[in-house]
Length: 135
View (tube, one colour):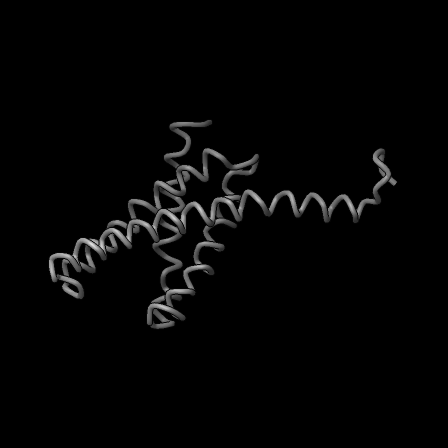
């Protein structure tokens, strides 16, 4: 028994639950930022009648890169000790949540699988930039 009356396994379970909340928070922040930026790009291009054009694809990709990077900067600043482990877990969560694009947006599965590469890049850039705001 530990000093608070909980056994070691009970403490581990409670600690794991507490560690998962910041990961979920940051996954939702990044997903929300990229969703919102994609929505705005989609709306602007639909308004101009240019949905489905190469310019639309470029704008959508750039908005996801920029706002995803901003999300990882925020995540890095809010991260508990062990920033890079936290950012890696957040990146995996973002990647898994982006599977919704396969189910609801018709993104091919193989294209989704390769999203792991740009997500890893924006995690690295955003995580590195987060040191400018919080050591």
